Image (tube, rainbow, N blue to C red):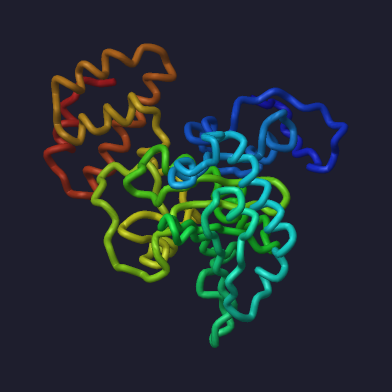
Length: 313
């Protein structure tokens, strides 16, 4: 992990580069609310800014089974397309179908991209605060993806919860932690014109409620957690999304919390005996504190009494 706290200029090629593990696996397990930490890693470290892997439908038709080589070529094509056309995509005043000839040649199947322009209300219907979505389609194999690109209006105030540096890391971590609650995110880039590629889940709000999960690891702020940002009950946009108080705790503490909420005396006693050092005991106290807060807010006297009768910890 890089220890230098300075965000280097991404164009400063003479700056020292620190070794770092691959970002995809790292970000799945090490989510941070401050996206500047991710910038420090990318700018300071010897690490690839390209994340994720080729979608399964494209892996299945990769020529010669060369997944790594085809993935690299696919990334380069998407990257070149974004660099060449980003201004037109951002400023479009009408819908447009883009033939993706290089991708067709790569996979040997038809590929097109559909982008939206502003409507009669002056807005792009597939756009959000800092980004907009295009639909990348392979009609002959019935494979469709949402390609999210970004505007160049990322302000400091909004960049902590919106924009590529916040959303890419959150999409990876949320998919890893709760795959049933998130539309699958496949690939992303944090270089040049950043993008995020995920499964296409439809452009029409379906009103399907999210899965009932009492112990959510990731939560979206109420004013963003609307049907427009979900399909089939799954999250399709990762802006204003962060770990819940439950999700911030390490796994042993989350396990203890669930045992307390289930009023499982034997399991709680066994778990408490496994918290040995001061840091682990602090985690246990946090789990107990959270359980009490939730029980009180839910008027759950059974859990409140159970906590009260637990041995002092």
